[in-house]
Amino acid sequence: MNTTYTVTGMTCQHCVASVTEEVGAVPGVTAVRVDLDSGRLDVTSEAPVSAHAIAAAVDEAGYELAP
Image: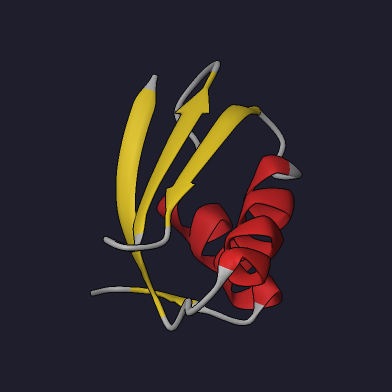
C-alpha cells in the first residue's frame, strides 16, 4: 500500500534523513521516500497506516504535514 503526503519546513538532506528515520519507525511502514525539492513523502506499508501516526512521526522529526 502506497500513500503520499507533503511535508513542510524541510530545507536540507539532514531534514530528509530525520523524516525518513522517524516515519520508517512507524509500525507497519516498510519503505519511505522523501523528496526535498517537492516536500513529497511516499510511504509504503503492509496495511493501511493512520495519517495521524505519520503526522506524529513527522512532527517528532521537527516538521509538519501540509493540510
